[in-house]
Image (cartoon, rainbow, N blue to C red):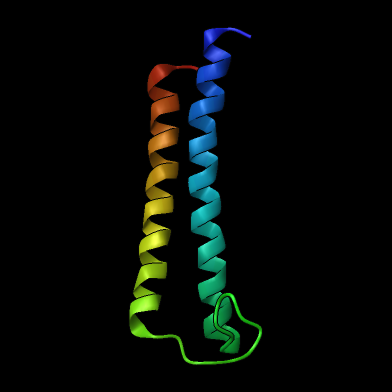
Length: 79
């Protein structure tokens, strides 16, 4: 494999990781709001405000990784 393939795999992996982190966490937040089930548990419960904020920060970081990965792929012209 050439250098371009390795670069695409490396940067694409970070972008995919960011997208998975953002969309998975967003799905957990939506499930909590819909059913009241706390992420990581099968029983309904109250989610502390600090934990909810940390989940939203995780969504933002995931979207940032995804956006930066897509930007870097476009900038280098490997796609």
